[in-house]
Every structure is written in C-alpha cells, then in structure tokens.
Image (cartoon, rainbow, N blue to C red):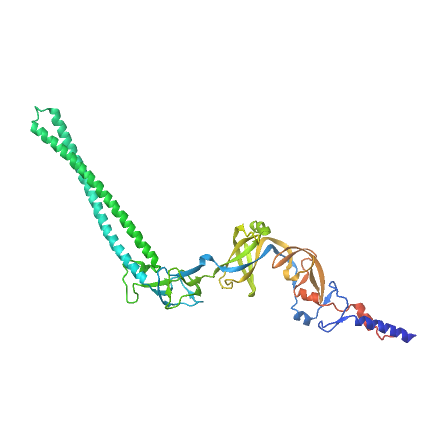
Length: 453
C-alpha cells in the first residue's frame, strides 16, 4: 500500500513537471506552465546583458504635449539656384562637377557667345550715341540760359521804348517833332517784336532740350537692357570694357550666385547652350525645409501651440535629433486628403538632412515642467493598459500606471509610480517575452519526489 501511494505521488509530480515549459533563462531554470504577465521575473546577469536590459530611477522632470507628423526634406526655395545663360553660345568649359562646393563669385561655366559680342557692339554704339546726346543736351541747356538772358534784355528794351513813346505822345506834336514821334513808335514796335521772337526762340529751344533728354533716357534704358541680357559679371557689362588676351568680347562667364553645393549638372563642353536652358543647379543645404501634411482635425492644436520647437528624426541616423520650427501652415486644405500643407525650417550645418529624405517630426505643443516622468521606452501598452517593470533586487515586477502627457522622449505618470522607483528603461518588451521562473510551491513539489513518507 505504501508503494502504491509513493507511485501515485510520483506520477502526480511527473505529470505536473511535464506540463511546464523549460527554457534557457540564464541558468536553465524551470518555468511554470501557464503564461502570466503579472508574475515576477528573475533575470540573470547573462540574460540581462543579452536583451540589453537597462534601468533608470523615476524622478520629477519636464514632459511635453506633442504631435507626431512626417515630412520630406527639401532645399529652401531661396537657397536653390538654377544656372542658365541669357545669350546662346557654345560651352567652352565647365569648371565644376556634381558634389563640388562653390563660393559666391566662383566661375562655373565659360561660353563663347556671338550673340554677346553683338550685344556689346550694340551697347557701345548706344553708349556713343548717348554721350553725343549728353553733349547736345548740355549745349541746348546753355542756349536756353542764353535765350532767357536775351529775352529779359529785349523785354526791358521794349518797356523803355514803350515808356519813351508814351512820354512823347503826352507832350503832343507841338513839343515833339512828328518825325521823332514816328521814329519812337517804330522803335517801340521793333522792341516788342524782338522780345516776342526771343520768347518763341526760348520756348523752341527748351522743347528741343527736353526731347534730347527723353532720347538720352531711352538710349540709357536700351543700354541697360542689353547689359542685363548678357548675364555676366559686372566688369564685362561695362560698355567701354575692351577685350584682352585672356578674355574675348564674346566670352560669357557664369558665376556662382552664393556659397553652396553643385547638385545637378547638364552642361558639357561643346554643347550649344540656349537662352534659359538649365546648365547647373547649386543648392545650400545649411538650412532646409521639411514639407509635411497636417490633418484638418489637428490644425487648431498646432495654431494655438505654446512652443515653436520641432524635433526631427531620420531613419538614416537613429541617434540624430534635429531642431526646427514651424514657419508656415497653409490657409488652404487639400480637398481630397483634408490636410493643410505645413513647412518646418531646420538648420542643417552638418548636412545630415538630405533633399528627399523622409523625416519623423515631433511638434511640441506645450510643456509641463514638474511631472513624475519615465522614459517613453519604459512604458508598454497592452490594449487600454499601460505598465512598466519595476526592479527590486534581481526581481522585475509588472506595475500598471496611469499615463498623462506623453511625447517621443518621456511619459508623465499620474498614478502607479513614485520618485525613487527603479524601472526598466531599455528591454522592457523583452521582459514580457520571458516566462517567469518556477514558484516556490512547484520547487517544493519537485523536491518531495522520492522523499520518505
């Protein structure tokens, strides 16, 4: 009977142990059968190192209310330049390659342009004509001044002649001989006529001077228009600039408009360049724009935000966290997607952000500075439940929490933790995949196998 009871007890224990799942958890300890997320976990140093387990102490800190978006990196519109010629010609040389850094004023392309030579010839003709007109204008203005003086003298002479005539007529024919009176009348008429002729001459000369000025202005505008067509540096635009051994009159030099990077090249030596044809593209990526789409339901939150900070992350560099700011939210929505176009401006001194790159954006809406916080990586969500693992010695116990504000870095804990608690900050999800070790009851049952009654 005793052997029967021992056999029954042994069968029971073996059946219980066979239902358990054995796994390697540091030292190959037994695990209980049913998976229980609430059971404490004892993790050996080897397993902790294997899953990258890290802990941190719960403390007070700042947490932000954030909004997650995505966007595409673009060069800022005012930092992307297209290099093109305004005069047709044959490309002689291209001094840069894609990827080259250029400085403002660097010569990029040289073009032999017969059209430029013709333009400069026309400019010089216009310049010569313009200078001649300036001389004529000066002469006309001098003549106007002379005529004004002569007109004043003629008018004074006419006044004197009129006065003399009036005195003679007042004295009567007995006091003044008739022939003298006639002569004085003739002199007065002649003086009035000369004054009138001077007045007409002055008016005509003034109009001629004005016409010369208008003609000179038209020539000046034509000359400046031809200067603008050339699209070369200032020294070549001067109408009087003569060709040198190093520089022909038909040579066009296209220069860099600003410091930047050559991002595209279509020009090649021997190619005939047409006016307006894109030959090079130069961009400055020290400051970039990130274009995103803001859902209609979230526009009011972003518009009324208390902060202008935006954090930027990219898949190409997990450690990179860039900074930016919201520069523009479109007043017009996409009628299909129901989103507003949003622009983020971000400094990019190291060139980490590249054109066309996908970026994850975190827009900071407001900040709570005195909250109990844990790292975002410490919190696991299982349906509506949020929990962390609290460390007590070598034991890790699941602890439910009530989260508050959350961002891409920290989570506010409203209930469930207190400052000073130590929680798992890295490897929390891996802990959920480890089955807990056998409980003391299972260990006692196993040790009782073969024990005397």
